[in-house]
Image (cartoon, rainbow over all chains, first blue to last red; front, side, top):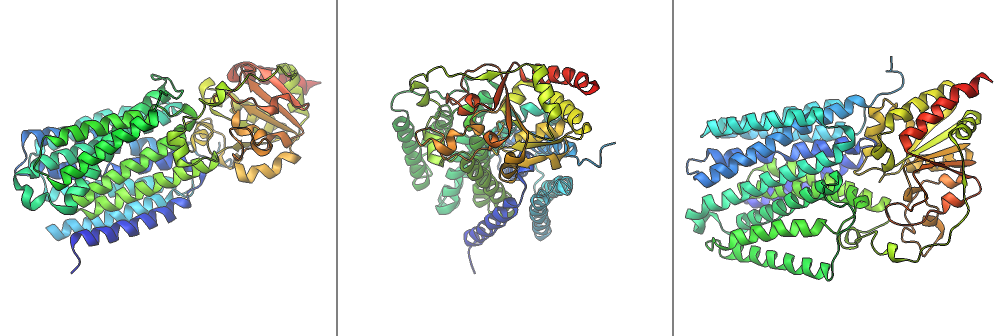
Length: 98
Length: 462
């Protein structure tokens, strides 16, 4: 059986290649929304923060650090997705104009 | 329950990949955002199934984050998007770094079994990248917001000092990995990472911000990825790797568009060396009034507008849209030629023009539009400078030699809206301005375009 680390490295390798291939195809037109979207996705660290704070052994220190981390990551998630959508709404073709 | 959560994570990871895939076209992009939101919601909900101790803390943090995030998303003007992005990089990196720190101290009592080998390596990488990206992004944000001077801040032996500091931080990191029980080292290590982030970014000038932001994006992603290894959570690894590769690709594109290498951007302090060059002799140039500019535009059958960061500074995008409409109504073909590094982050100019309701099929990338300049009657340069400098093609001594540029000089007539003849950010004189077919239009971009517009209807009645 491969260890967790080995499986993790496999996942990392494959995800990196998928990421490179998928993002290479994004038109330069959308690079700014792309960056704010990936930024929101990287706020997935909220998952780690939740795990830390909800741990039974959580000390006051880790609760406080986790709290700040969840706040920061949630800000990113909320503002990241909303502003990306706001930007994308502005991209219109000619025909769609009234 | 545990396996259910794992399945939720798998679906969530797939949604993240789909979300990025759908970003490849403006038609599907909004679906992409939706997929991303769904993926994130599932990931958080899935995590809460197993981990909901101290839920009051979690809920309060969610609430504060949402309360802060919503106004940011709706109030932020589009010209300030680069600053906001830098700020989010800072928030994301801070979250990762703090989780790493908390994790380290929390597992301390079981150090001999839990803080060994690769877990510890991952924790150190996570906190190092997290903290340095946090302060680095704050510096980038300060420069973009012009709280800090956007020119490079340099001092003697800068690279040597930075390198030494980084080496010490790395050394302490290795020491923490080898002897995780030495808790006193950790705060020093974290502090040095914070300081290094500041020092890394202050020597970088405003024009290089597109690359820097992309690079910080990549670091923030890799930091989340390292967290995935430390917590043995594959979803974090996937999302972090996607973010990391996205940032990497964008920064490579930005570097190519400036014909520079990573090391040159990070350690070159661009824009500092050239200013010391002797002042060039005064050369003759032609200038024109708004009235003349209007009649030239009126007579043209095709116009290519080349926008640059100056446009964003002058907030001229809506006036330019009016000009675009006025010319299109007269049957003149108007397109926009967009250089990859125009603006302060990748693709920034497209967002500004889209905000002004200019249809995106009129926004043309550099490689696609360059062939059209020789057939184009008028090239109108607004707030762009170095990306139009023909010296990049011909003058081997120029600091921007080899940088891909928009071939504006091949158009039949060139008009440049500019405040004065002062050289641009990089301090390089632009030969374009002294060509016989170039007309300089002096003034603020927004005010001047408004004046041209005023002259246009008069011209049509004749």
